[in-house]
Length: 166
Image 1 (spheres, rainbow, N blue to C red):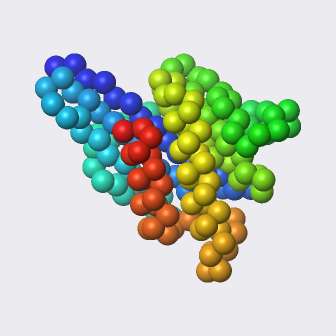
Image 2 (image 1 turned 90 degrees about the horizontal axis):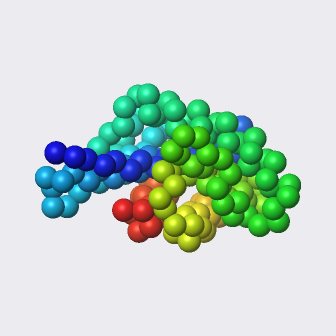
């Protein structure tokens, strides 16, 4: 019974605090014809909510947050030399890679992944989420720079993640 897990974490970071976070887990087992997959997110209080799937251990979760936090400095450095919004892979640690996208308002989209994803699918995912973020930020009820708690935004980000990663 061999199994392979592919975990992704997507985070939107504002001027200092995370505005949105979701975890994308895909587990494939040789005993299953179709792999169990799910997308988990965190609500504004930091508790997990999701659609099921294989969970990650606390150590892996802490490690992904650590890698993402460390990569923020790399995003700042690369953004000065790169004229585009999609910054590609900005940091690598062990078998994990961090891809980044920075908006004109310095909002950072970070995706930690195993490096087996094609760059085009990551870029398309970032562009879809950027479109969603712009639409959400134009909502008169949303205060810029605060945590995104909209269930509609969350479900659309998850749908985009399923489209490109699962």
